[in-house]
Length: 201
Image 1: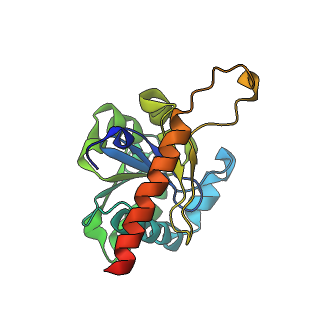
Image 2: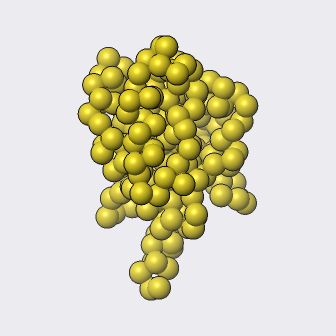
């Protein structure tokens, strides 16, 4: 996505494939759960991952108006498993899920997350699908904390919210930054306009 201050943000993806955008990057989480559950979540199989791809691709095309989206998929294990040396989930689940997806030309990976962000490979993709919270939240916090927008893809309603918590520690001190709230309204307006255009066409 290009142009405008609102395009220099991250949309954080939680559970229903919430997407994250920062400049040239949109990220999505596979899910948001305790780290101890991730292997079990991943082992549930290809269908769960593919279903999330369907949600992401549909939302990229309809809500974000990206006609031919390119999605990078991150690995679950360090270094994306190092060809099975560190872990088998990439070889046994994630890569087969990518290849079995009917539109697999839209998906690439799994990538080693640290090298992926360090080399700014996200600039080559419209969206990055992460397997757990900190894979995408750490880059998010470092690059653009305070102006991101939470957007839940795959819902019949449009749901956006600020990228941060309620900040009770600074309540009533008149120092809160409303930037993320303002951007959340802007994104809701943008997605509403895109859905309205889709309904008319």
